[in-house]
Amino acid sequence: MPGLVDEYGARLVDELDFGLEAERALAFQKAAEGLDLISVCSAALPVLGLTTRRVLVTDWVDGERLEVTAARDAEEAKRLQTVAITAFLAMLLESGSLHADPHWGNLLRAK
Image: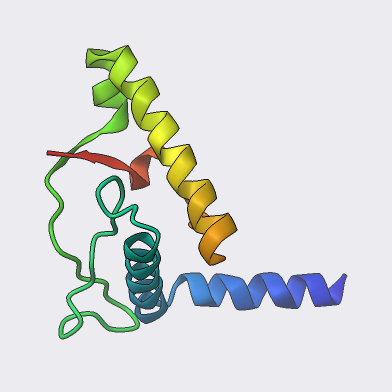
């Protein structure tokens, strides 16, 4: 059990390091480009000169939260769910990259 607690603590510290978060966003973007998924998914890219270990600054992404899309157009929401699942699986299975936090708060329908 101590090993599990140590691992959890290390991952928690990593999660709070926004420099690592910026690196992960760039890796996600590169993987999406390499798999030709860039037309359906992309990351909010970090502004490298302003991002630090304690502050993450990203490009602005103009979009609509998926629950808003779902309330307005259920069929479009279903289509976007299929796109998201397909992209998620392609990233995992073809590039080995995993977006481990794909909740609706992290997904936007870009305008």
